[in-house]
Image: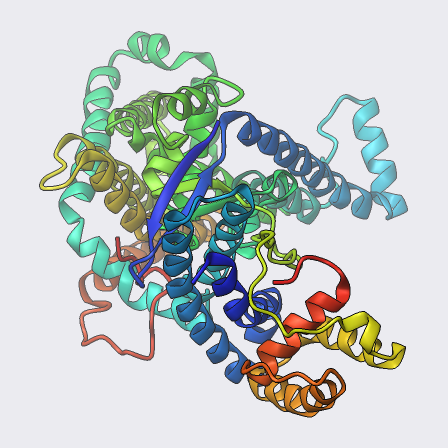
Amino acid sequence: MDLNLVVETPEQIGIDFEIAGVGSRMMAAIIDTLVMSLLLIIATVAPLVLIASSREAAETMVDNVARQEHVFRGVSAVGLAIVFLSSFAVIWGYYIVAELVTDGRSPGKRALGLRVVRVDGFPIGLAETVVRNLVRFIDFLPGIYGIGLVSMMAGRKTQRLGDLAAGTIVIKERAGQEKGAFTALPTPDEHPPLPNTRVSAALTPAEMTLLTTYRHRVALLSPSVRAHLAAQIAPILRARLSDTSPLDDETWLWALAHEAQGGPPA
Amino acid sequence: MTAANFAAKRRIDWERLASLCVEARRLKSRRSGGEELAELARLYRRAVADLGRLRTLVAAQRSSEAQQAMVDWLNALVARAHAEIYVARPLSIAGLASFLTRDFPARFRRSWKLIAFAAGIFLGSTILTYALCANDIALARSIGGAGLEHNAHGFGELGRGHDGASDVTTTAFYISNNVKVAFMCFALGISAGVGTLYALIQNGITMGVTLAFVHHAGDTENLITFIASHGSIELLAIFVAAAAGMSMGHALIVPGPFFRAVALRRAAVSAVTLVLGAACLLLVAAFFEGFISPSSLPMSTKWLIGGVNAAALVLYFAMAGRAAPNPKLSSTLGYITH
């Protein structure tokens, strides 16, 4: 599947989104279902363990099983209440909470690098996630997302009924869109005008270290600090390299750092 | 200027934007992050312009794979920053307060026709079934079956009251079961409303047959006493959830000036107010159904509580949220701007 959706930003520039295919959607659903089942088991077993930790209650429950009565008969009403409420909350609330707290990346989607967004590219809010995850129960019919699959394959944007109702799409996040660090900007092999120097030969190891450190730190600094730092470092190195290029300190230092690294300069 | 030159000139800002995006969540959660967030917004706007420029430059040249990778990278960066800047309004206590005191009752009044329609379908099925079955218990058995008859006798017993320890459990069961019914009534609306109608009629018939069984057993008074305190809240909540489902159906059948897809989306997203409101009502109803209805309180007290509840509902839906909006109470669901 290689479907693209172009979303117009309020700034009038289109951003491309790659729409996730049926296969990755199903994989994500399988993982989410596993996580949900695990939570469901915990939600059911935890109250049981809590109750059974009282010796008296445990004996009553064993008697109940022996007499083929309901396990909880005469035990703790609160325990059973917790089982009802927590399993209900897991079944109906898992996806809603998972999508809300992660900006549309439930664990299964995160594993596959997917994210739910609104069709206009905006992050989903409470209303969208409630709609798409309540209608999920219809999509699931008549079992393992039968209706949802038909809907996803019939439309152009791979939307199940819940997506259609909520106005959402599931997109593939490219490298860099994920929550982790961005990879470096890939650069083509063209050389912009650079300071006319042979960097590594001309600089001392200490100066090289200074350059490399600058290269690694610069993106984390605020503009004022960055400019201040560049104004301190650049004149020294310019003098060492007898540079006369008209570039401003920051740009010059940046290009220099790249050339010094030996990789293709920016 | 070549694409690479342009990228070399602008990349310091882009990489700064990238690092701010990575930190954005942390910045938003602390008070002192304002300056950096403002910087993020500023850099984002420039990056958006840069993306347009870079695309033009790459398109003008004999574009290589490497150049396309550069455009993709900036596109990804802009998308990520866009997601950090344009966010849905976060959930808050003020949002919940506004939802309960304003949005839900106001939305209820706007949707009163659909709610009344849902009530008519449900109660109509109930009354019709009851009228047919009340004096024809054989028909009741053929519709309801033995299981329902057994349950009905249980209901008849309930009204007599008891002092059980299982009220907490019962309440929890009613919450999970009834909210589930409400959610299904909404979700089924995606079938152009047919599924919701089916659910309403089916539940209406079940209630009619149950009443017939109870009547047959001579327990009617007990059952009505049992229902009195919570019935009005619970039934109204189901009607509200069904109205939410039917508003989806309505949008699909009569989309007005919109494409069906757009009409559906608008209807569904705004009907969430009704669905969540119905769930809140059911929480309240379950409390009464678990603690008051089956208790050994005297019949007159149960009736009094039922009357007070019904009056409170009428007052709430007639009056709440009519005052001029308070701008400080911005609702969680109020941002919808499709």
